[in-house]
Image (cartoon, rainbow over all chains, first blue to last red; front, top):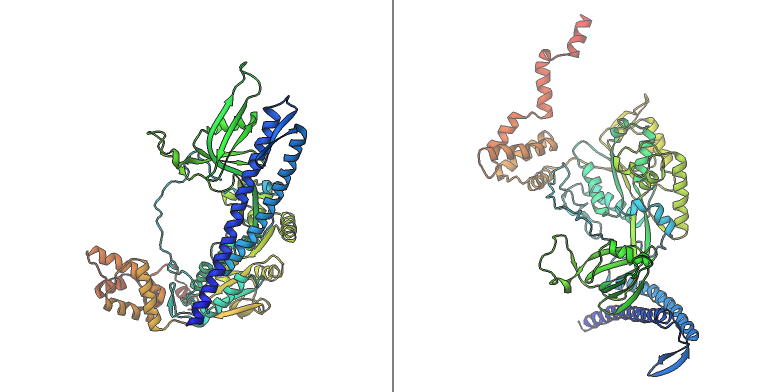
Length: 132
Length: 459
């Protein structure tokens, strides 16, 4: 009896941990995307709203620093690339995590989940079939 | 993606018609593949159902493809029911094509073409489509038209999800498509990143009280959750035949809807095969071998059988299930006799499942299930009488009597079918044995009486 409840408890802990893992990864993606959007806004603002200023004030942590504009946009651009890559990696990880969660919960594996997508040309070619 | 043009879904109360096997929901097996006596509309036939269950598991796991199964047994012993059961338990994702053996002779195409189309309808291809979309609720759209009236418009679009909010700068093209879709603040929209296509999903619930009067087609949706820029993955399952059809250019894609697809060139098929195999190598497609069911398979002729022999060896081949009620008989198109009317070489490749006649108890059970299916209440005595009829004539005849007796009962405003109702329809409709008996007695008065003519010739 004691051993049984112990085992159930262990199993439930495992499921909860896996679920928690999925949720944190999701939240992380959300946060990174929100950062990505802020960066995008900043890039737009640099391009459109202040065409003739040479130096801009950039907020690092809790301090504003005057910085050359070209340097700034370059920096943000690099940050964007980094963010894109991180989000992609997280999405890939998320898939494995969801699969693991499904597995220990005893749910069937999602079908076609691990296929690589068709290219846009191929999608266009069989578009009529897909959009039924 | 949902579009909010015209509400295309109309509510039509679907009237389900009752077919002979409409009560079959599956094979009626438990998790250990042991058949339950009565389950999912199936009764008895334990051995054959168990065999079918094993085959079903192998199909599900994708272990067998290019194999063939023959279900053989006397008429009315549940061959089609077992095939239906397999189809039902395969689920919606595995393609199942049913075909009657005689069907291929009446089409306006060659027999082998009809067969290869049926084969290819039974093979599914699973593919994935992936798009990057921006999904959010419109907080504000601001469009500045140039003072001169012409020239580039600029604008800003504010989108939000439950987690974040951001501003997008809009170019001329995006402004045009936004105004074309009549997007306004409070709408929930998606923007396809690759194509820039905008689609409206509906209005946000938080804006439900903005206007008092609203069209019936206004859909309210929740404000999207999570990140703004999402990745959407859609998995489609299409059949090889469908890909064939859109690629045989002479017909164009409309051919898919008209039903008459004509013949498809073998080059097209080869190209499709090559492409699909390439996709599979690249991990872009999964092939799902489905099931092709040919009922009354003894109706096929020698040509078809040799085609089947060859088609089963191709690497894109479904599981073939055939059913026949013939014993040793002539193979159509030849003068040779063979068991089940199927050539020995094909027979050799088959897994054969036999069905046996139902016992009285099972017949009783089946009749009860059919009564429930056809919404007919049967009294205990009537049930017993009907079971006797089923045993002495045929199960099919007894099943026919259910609905007719139900009608008679309703006519006399009864609620439960009594023995009298059964007696009445039994006298109204002849079963096969009585009909033959009648023929023998009164054959002289029928037209074109061959036995009589033969008798005259010899005299």
